[in-house]
Length: 135
Image 1 (cartoon, rainbow, N blue to C red):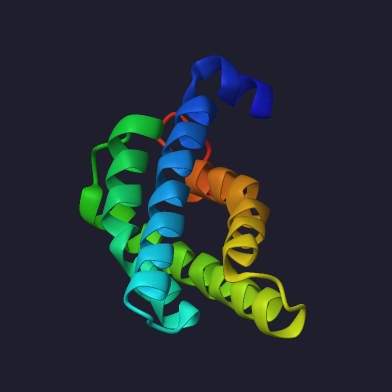
Image 2 (image 1 turned 60 degrees about the vertical axis):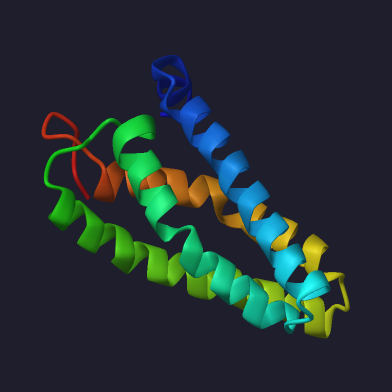
């Protein structure tokens, strides 16, 4: 399945959008934490909220090219995203507070750990096309 995704280019586009999303998350988190002196966890949660629209539209239009049924897809996207963000934020908090990692390292590890799972969930359950098997 991953080979087919690479051949179609959707996985590569997912990776490029993921890099852009990570850069935004890390940059804004740094800016809010180190420039505005907002607690790292609040900064990160604020940043997560800001990337929702970017990630949905890039996934819908650029990555999976499934622009139809936007309202239904957005509802599914938000449901899965809520779970992913809770896991992501929890991992950042755990890695920073319990394992004493710098918050930027925690963000990198957390974001990387859910990257592949999100691709397959989004492909199969959110942005699937009629000819693809839905979950």
